Amino acid sequence: MEQIWSKAKKRRWLWGISGTAFSAIGFIGLALFEQYNGVLSEFRADLKHFNETSSEYVKRESFQRFREHFRESMKELHEGELTRVRLEQELKASEKAREELALELRQMREHLAFLDGRQTATPKTAAAERKIEPHGN
Image: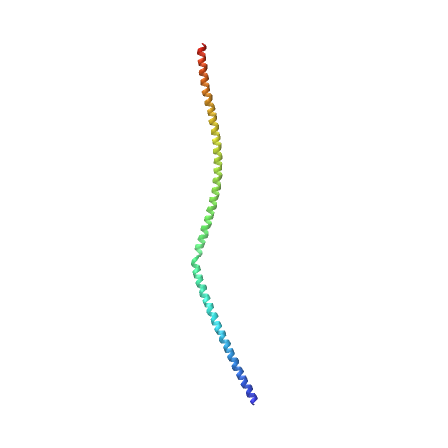
C-alpha cells in the first residue's frame, strides 16, 4: 500500500506543479493580452487623433474648389497662349504691310520729286524760249 500511496502522492504533487505552471502561463498570457489590448487602444486613439487633425488640413470641398480653379487657370493660360500666337501673327502681317506701304510711299516721293523736277525744268525752258523769241523779233 505504501507504493500506491507514494504513487498517489507523486500524482498529487505532479498535478499541483502542473496546475501551478498552467496558472503561471495563464497569468503571463493574460498580462500579455492586457498589454496588447492597451497598445491597440492607444494606437486607435492616435489614429483617431491623426484623422481628426488631417481632415482639418484639407477638406474635400476646398480641394475640389482648388482643382476647379486650377483647371480654369490652365484654360485661361491656354487661351492666352493662343491669343499671343494670333497677335504675333497679326504683328508680323502688319509689319510686312507697313514695310510695303513705306516702299510705296518712297516710290511715290521719288515720282513726285521727279515730276517736280520736270515742272521746274519746263518753266525755265519755256521762259528761256520766251526770252529768246522777243530778242529774235
